[in-house]
Amino acid sequence: MDYLLQLFKSVANERRLEIAELLLKEGELPIEEIAEKLKIPLATCCRNLKALEKVYFVSSRRKRGRALYKLNKPDKHIYNIKIIDMIKIRNQKKASRKR
Figure 1 (cartoon, rainbow, N blue to C red):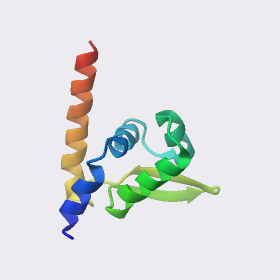
Figure 2: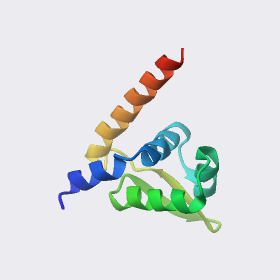
Figure 3: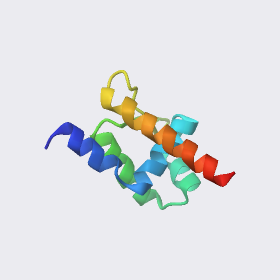
Figure 4: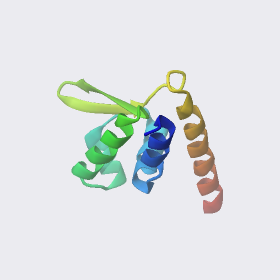
């Protein structure tokens, strides 16, 4: 399957968008904290992060036995720039509706 199609399919999910928004706002976070902040089960969080990691939208590393996740650098993954821009626009629209 085409990489761009896989990427769009991976981020076309409300839960994964919430994860991306959180990582965009907060930077690198442990999986437990992501699950806690989004009020979702750890298994759900893990499954969605793995889907995003598979298309190089997020990356992980281990530190002291904990999995830490962050958005991948857009300069290495050019499509991520546009998706991150769309997430920022989505956040701005959500914020303006709250006012």
